Length: 195
Ligand SMILES: Cc1cc2nc3c(=O)[nH]c(=O)nc-3n(C[C@H](O)[C@H](O)[C@H](O)COP(=O)(O)O)c2cc1C
Image 1 (cartoon, rainbow, N blue to C red):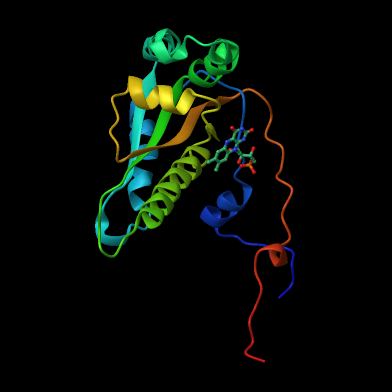
Image 2: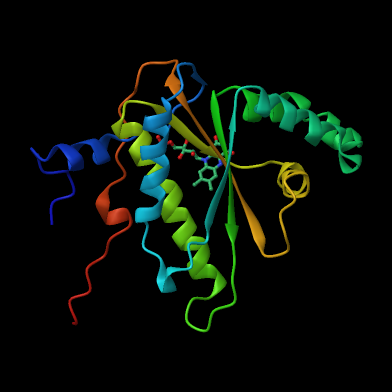
């Protein structure tokens, strides 16, 4: 199998092969209808036993700043380590016009263990990235460094079966799109021929 991508005139696949993460992001945000479509794409992820483990808490406008303030004023945030991260937390929670706090709700299931539910959630969020890109918006999936994940878990009132999986920011790209450097396919695919 050659390692370079063959040409395709399939527009869906061509777009998928060009997807990039973009940061920073600004207004305009996706319209309500566009955002609905982007979020609906999550529900087309493969999902063992139909448990719908992916969850997203949607933040827009002033709610982003309100959540940041709740995070920073949380009793567990009154440490030097957290306060030294104020700038980073502010950037992650208030730069893009739309912020999705990503979490997975894990259920006990005899055939779908936790790791499969986390994989399904990852697939759902990747669909969100691809849908945003398809509509011409920028998106970026990032971690919750330091104590941010635990603080968001607490401020959002999540439970013991909820796992924080990061932040997905959505908005308009500030910088021009730079083509992705392709990873050679044989880095991640090996063919087993039975000999
Ligand atoms: C779960 C997860 C967490 C991530 N966290 C960060 C992060 O905190 N900071 C960062 O620079 N990139 C992070 N990334 C990587 C970016 O989202 C992005 O994939 C990377 O910059 C490569 O860009 P590309 O998607 O255009 O190839 C994360 C990716 C995943 C899947």
